[in-house]
Amino acid sequence: MAERETWTTRVGFIFAAVGSAVGLGNIWSFPFQTGSNGGAAFLVVYLAIVFLFGFPAMLMEFVIGRRSEKNPISAFGELGFPNWSFAGTLGVLGSMVTLAFYSVIGGWVLSYIVGSLTGAYFGDAGAFFGSVSAGGLAVGTHAIFMAMTVGIVAFGVQSGIERATKFMIPAIIVLLLGMAVWGATLEGAAAGYDYYLSPDFQYLTENIASIVPAAVGQAFFTLSLGFSVMIAYASYLGRDDSLPADGGAIVVINTLVALLAGFVIFPVLFAIGVEPGSGGTSTAFVGLAGAFGQLPGGAVLGAAFFVVLLLAALSSAISLLETPTSYVVDNYDYERKTVATALGAAIFALGVPTALDTGTLGWYNDVVFKLLLPIVVLLFALFVGWVAYGPSTDELTQGSTFGDGFTTLWLWWVRLVIPVGIGLTLVLGVQELLVKAQILESAVILA
Ligand code: TRP
Image (cartoon, rainbow, N blue to C red):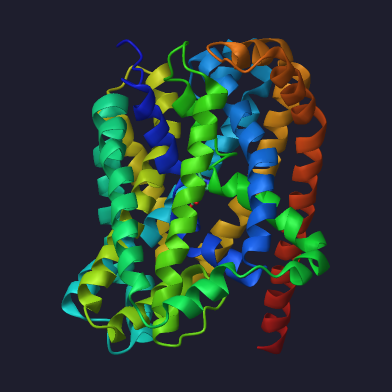
């Protein structure tokens, strides 16, 4: 079997991990969450939570990956606990289901890039969304997006993922910066910034009980935790890299990109007086697209915005495909190209129902992110904190200049605090799923 690859440079690893973390969530959820939850006041709480929950949880996946130098399923056996492989397996399944519908959304973005250039959504953005989001066209663009993902992963860690993300991340940042500068010249800019960041401490304190668990969940989500991608990526790391330093860099860059997105989105929305809404699919694809349609230079701006979305989605998608690919390549004697293609085809098929019906897509999304993600993060926390804590703490100090005090604090944090945080998000997620199921049920009864 060929020798296992490693990242060529530290920056290569950081960009790849940032590529996974920076996704649709940074651009179409985070700014809206900030705007509607108290602006700058929310931001302070969010930043604290990302560093208190997201950052230490990311380090859990890093230590498992680098210690074992194995894919997320075999890693547990390699560390001496084969019974725990089910945790990694759940994560990998989560990756595959996520990619199945993430790719469908990636396909919509492709349609929007073309639609920006042709002006196809300028007249009626809602109708355009309807025509590209479900049906034959959506299946086709889903296939194209998946083929792009396979095309990158097939080339491997160095000439595929590392080379692609080294170009994609700077491109995302440069395009967003350019659009933010242009956004500042729009008439709605001041009102947009005001909506986005003006601090509302009263709202925050009144709603802190619901905001905190939501922010903990968002912290895991935005850092791509739970689906084992950070185990897979860290397994290609050299021993002299500092895990806490790299993790810190990834968290900071991911947050800056999310923040920057708000400086593009709100001036655009306020320039034409569109209600910001709550973010998500319809705001991005109908509200924002509609705004681009009305602004001078909208074709170019719209295209640039959707190219950013495409790069963000694609750099996340390759991490989702790498996770199962690494498992097969580590354990069976198949060519990486063959493995990536076969897995890509299977995941494509899994995604077809979500390309035919956006409601189905919503269910895939809810089950993996509200249920599976917190469960897997909890399993990883128990494993790292209570089962394999010896090798885990040892691995954390390897190559790191953070002292023993940091390691001890981290261990107890993983043992006690992270599980409590996950418990909160899990309860919240289950509640939301139940409410949704109930609404569905009563709709069925009404019909
Ligand atoms: N972090 C991604 C975003 O912000 C979404 C995501 C969650 C993800 N978990 C993932 C992406 C795992 C890739 C792998 O949009």
